[in-house]
Amino acid sequence: YIIERLQKRSALIPILQALQTECGYISEFAMQYIADLMGMSAAEVYGVATFYHFVNTRPKGRFIIRLSRDMSSMMKGAKMVAQQLQNDLGIRFGETTPDGMFTLEWTSCIGMNYQAPAMMVNNEVFSNLTAPKVHRIIEDCRQEYNAHRKPVGNVGETYSNTLNYANHQANAALTKVVAMSPREVIAELTASGLRGRGGAGFPTGLKWQFGAAAKGDPKYMVCNADEGEPGTFKDRIILGKHADMVFEGMTIAAYVVGAREGIVYLRYEYSHLRPHLEAVLEARRRANLLGKDILGRPGFCFDVRIHMGAGAYVCGEETALIESLEGRRGEPRNRPPYPVERGFNNCPTIVNNVETLASACCILDRGAKWFASMGTERSKGFKLFSVSGDCTHPGVYELPWGITVDQLLETVGGKGAKAVQVGGYTGQLVPARQFDRKIAYEDLGIGGSIIIYGPDRDMLEVAENYLEFFIEESCGQCTPCRDGNVKLLEGIRLLKRGTCSNRYLNDLIGLSETIKLTSKCGLGQASPNVIVALNAHFKEEILARPIQGH
Ligand code: SF4
Image (cartoon, rainbow, N blue to C red; front, side):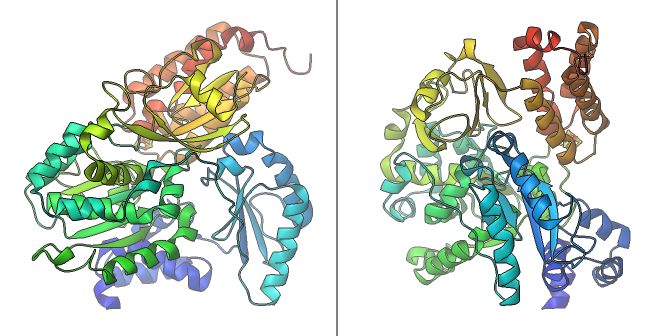
């Protein structure tokens, strides 16, 4: 079995992860050994291992503490938490304690913004951190280690309004679907107007139609659970509370396109969800909702496995995700061909986001008309929003498309905000005077992240945080993204010091346009959005900044 696995390139990352669990890190010797067994070069293995944030290529502590440094966390006291960690452990970020017990690192958003600041201790998540709480967690780690136990995280409940998903009768959609032809299912989904909920907004019915028509065997159904956009956590809530619906949606998609294998690409930061997801899958197998001849329909065979991500924001892009599934660096591919024609292992692959699959279940149970009666002309139905930042009620909200930013702020207790980041770091920074804009594909299309900035927030600190994130997460394939964002960050830091002229700001805008135009994927194409927004909406505030030290 092991030899068979080793011959498959796609086994590389799971093998690295398994080895890391046993040994703590992947040594150069181990890389050479794996390379020999898999018929690869050591350089290839090294290239993959060093691409992912959560693959350790050097020894680390028994407890790796990763503090989230997304903007919501920074606004809610991550710096104070960082100081407390450094004081308690006697080390700085990037270091390991001399006894080999703790390593301290920063990390990107871990999907806990509504309970920020938050951190991971190995795979466990701790949120709503305060200095005394941090101190206690460190002590608990020491005691748990002595008692040979694992620390247990403390993820609390999320504030959310009643989700439509909660009303879904288990497997009602699947039961209806197996009595329909794939063509009828596609027609219903198309009539509903459902668009992909990951951010790009591609019509789901059309994607399934292309999947059904694609030539090739086997076909794969992939659920993109690599929710890495800073400020987004709604997929985590769906997977935690309504995983059945996600698997039901995958099974329906498989029925429509003719896939026999499903893969959930689960981001590493959500490792704590895996036991729950495996249990749900097992229960579905026992109930003949997965496996052979599903629901007694001869020939309808489909099963799902979970593939763990290893920490790379860019893998949320579907072609990068497929590269990662194949055991490579998560670098986006050129398109065409699109995954639906040639995706995983060069076979037709349908990639849908977690929320899209859950929404498809609601539609196929309650009907396209019901869904299409909500929302706007080009944005039908409801949408989940992950709300964090300066508001009284952060959490997950289900709201119809077409509400204004103002209405959303009213709902979540965010009135008086200076600006709102709609759509995560790659989205749009909307200033207060534009809060009458609509959240819908007609105006502000969005994957789900809403970050609210109160009246006293420094927008240059916001931009600096974004650029640091993009530099960290760029896969490095294209020069404009890899090097251009570094230049933009230098510019932001000059602006922060008050030593930047109007002319230099114009140069930064020129560079931003170049990066947007010449980058290969959405990360590079959207990374300068914040600079463009600062120039358009906060220019006077920036240029009036006093020179530091004067
Ligand atoms: Fe990689 Fe950036 Fe190019 Fe995207 S734009 S492919 S993240 S270098």
